[in-house]
Length: 250
Image (cartoon, rainbow, N blue to C red; front, top):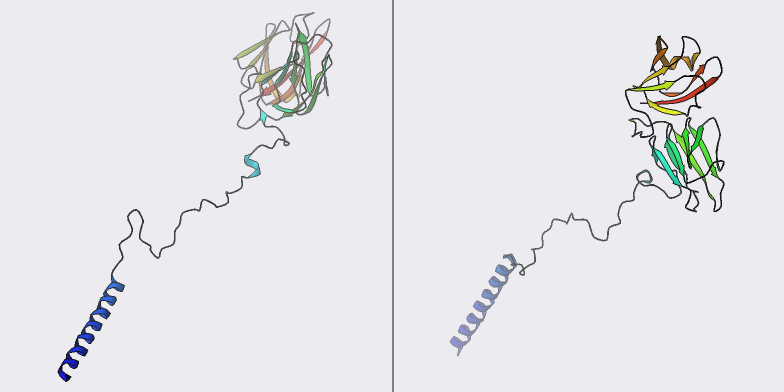
């Protein structure tokens, strides 16, 4: 009887030792991950959460609906006066540009102040050259009413933007013959040569005087521009004095 009890306790002890050894082995072995799932590690994730708040856009990177308009170069800005609409939103155009109002009769357009803009009319078209920086207001009187249009006249940008409203040919000729038509204000590129024909050695002046360099021979005067900006050339002959306003750009 005693022998059976000893054998019984021995078997129980052996079974207990086997269980402890198995538990220790299980705690030290790596548990294989479930298919399609990565094992868990101690390294924290560096991915940006999908619920993260996006960064704010800098105010300078966007154009506000109530802020100043982006400036264009010396362009030709067209307005169709046959369409009734309000032009409350201002536009910004570089000095030398033109506002062209089409399908509008004579005597129905005014622009101010006169020292910043020069307008002329022909065949249902009004064109206003922007000759100095500042704010210009163009009024159109008709029914239905269109306008007014506010134009912010800016300095030419650096580097300069395209200037389709300006003369870029190698040479531009002005006929100074007596009793000629009034000259409209012009915009020219600085490397253009201005040629004035049919004028004697006298009767020619430029304001400011240091903006051009001219030479004369046989009734022809050629001038090269030394600076950009707005200048006035005045031609005086025996019967009249005629000014020519020039905006010179790069």
